[in-house]
Amino acid sequence: MSENFLSQEEIDALLGKKSKVDECVIGDVEKDIIGEVGNISMSTAATTLSSIINHKVLITTPRVSCIPFRQVIDECDIPKVVASIKFKQGLMGNNLLMMDVPDASIIADLMMGGNGIVENKSLGELEMSAVAEAMNQMIGSASTAMATMLGKPIDILPPDVTLWDKSENIKFDEIGLDKSICKIAFDLDVEGLIQSEIMQIFNIETVDEISKIMMGDNQSSEPVIQEEPASEPVSSYSQPVHTVEVPAEKVIVQKPMFDKLTPNTEDRKSPRNLDLILDVPLEFSVVLGKTRKTIKDILSFGNGSVVELDKLADEPLEIYVNGKLIAQGEVVVINENFGIRITNIMSKEQRVQNLK
Image (cartoon, rainbow, N blue to C red; front, side):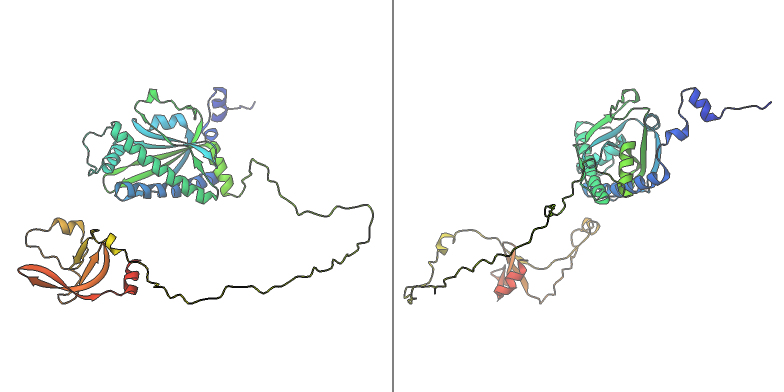
């Protein structure tokens, strides 16, 4: 007598549960593809965030997993700032960008000119608007990078940025809680101010479509109509072709007639209207020299500090009018006042080159 044992998958099926194998509906190849797409798009988003907050932003290699959306909610730290992105053109489905509230409060403080050190790491209306603008620009740059990778235009609707403050209040109708999603997690580092995790959530339909496009198996939903070159109608009998010669039309060529040229004895000088603009003020400035310093060097300046310029003592000074270099000169003293003696007027060619 042989004994038959039920496997764990069969037990889960009888109990109405999903096995771990069933939860992951995308393969390793799809994971690698969506991980690479997420890596490049989020790297572009990190560069955009860096330019917004004027701090260096780094992200690590993505970690891709396929889990139920409910598990994401149960495992993430609440509260969170969530940006919901819906594709308008190019892809179908939805995309979520999730960020912790303490991290969002630091980013908001940096955007408003702060140093990123905040005691009350909560989001008011003003901070929420700043974070929404940052996430909006991050998502826009990420979509542009994704469109470049996929080789097709991608258009998104304006992101909806909300605050998930309580687990029981989380309700996202676009993705069911029991539906499998693709989670892409990155470690986020902002110059010692932030060391946390940021997540991208894709639904499975979007992952499948991206994978097909990247593997060259994209099928357009609209039929492609290829126009064939027009061909001559086929008849059931042959007919001799007769060539008819059309006599060339005689072309009459005439010599053009012009009026005689007479010398102009009138004064060709255009009237000078400089009197109309003689009272227009211009900004006249003299540059002794220039140098480049770091913020650290400038903050160390004090009374008596010496700043070395890029000119020698006997070199001519530069004279600017409205920010344009027109001449060179040297310093003179007139009645205990400093002045400048013009020693060289820039030529027209030199002034044109300085305009570039």
